[in-house]
Length: 219
Image 1 (cartoon, one colour):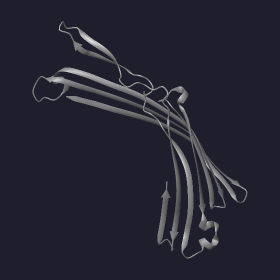
Image 2: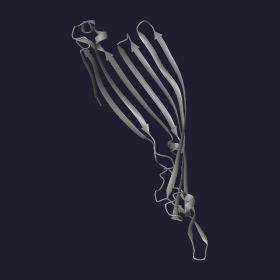
Image 3: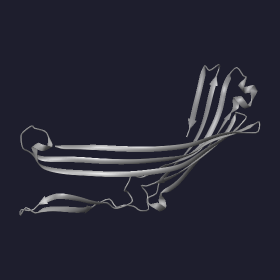
Image 4: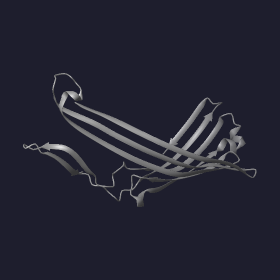
């Protein structure tokens, strides 16, 4: 008989500052500056029992031998981020983003990772009245963006792990043996975060009084 319990707690804190400024008659600047902290804790508890005493009575108290096992893990990620969008006359936009994370799953010298992004959009139907007022095109926008994001390893991958176990063996003389063992997976102290990149080009259009809609993306 084997039973186990898995508990997981996540505590997330977010603090954002938003801004919006009018720069003259044609330009507008808005965005967010923020901080994010995520703390995750997990616990795994299990019991395995052998040698049933009374047939078909299924609970751990009806077994003679018991083996207990447990695992606990903690992980913390903190991030600072900022977004800024510069708009021109409501039809041309440039957006820049950046985030820097610090993760507890990597060694101190590799914990910090910065991943920026940039994108732009151009509302053609608003920029040119001849297009926006045509009978065929109600709305037409093109966009392009380049983005990056990060991925982190699971906890305890940078260090070799020592496991301890009690009551592993009993000698013919009744002596109980406890053991320590080293994992067959070696820790890699040089492990770094993954960095993913993406390029996207898109087009949004509404045609013939919204009779036809097009949302195209290539990435």
